[in-house]
Image: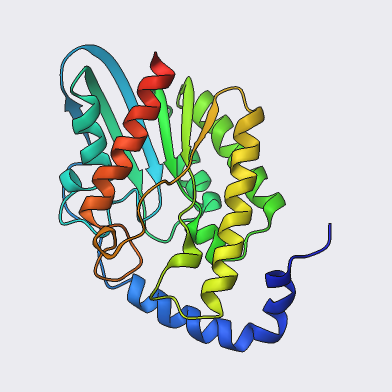
Length: 237
């Protein structure tokens, strides 16, 4: 397969892309992971054991507390009709490879389902499509064997080509790479027995962005959690 235009352009654009990338990374690192519980139990009804793994978005960067971030909003939603026992394993700047190492270092546990929110850091580090699919396959296998997940919902990648505070041509390069990896993830999920792909279908408006222009806002986390909850209920049904 011939390389795409953005992949070819990376070579002559390398000095510009590196400089722009450093600036974006500095802005993205201005916000910290919010305080709050990263495991617990909530609600009543049929028991549901939930594992959440991912990068800074899973860790809630952009929210003021974990209650107002992805894990908190998702547990609140699912707790309306389930007794949710949950655990969050999230870390800023982590890639899929990094998450595999972290999960391999943990003791085995038992969950009914897992959701993943990874990929942005794989994009910024230039992961190839082949490596991305391999690592995502390894992640799904690990979540099902070591952590007992009967099904896994993988969040799609955000539209990085639409981030207004990422300058051009970096925005174009990251956007093309994010689309490429997201398409690959959807293709993997289409053939995988327990993995499903959840596209990020959120309005790309200022109010859905955190103050750094890079991470989700609390409003975005609420909508994102709702998408996950609807998808999970469909699968459970």
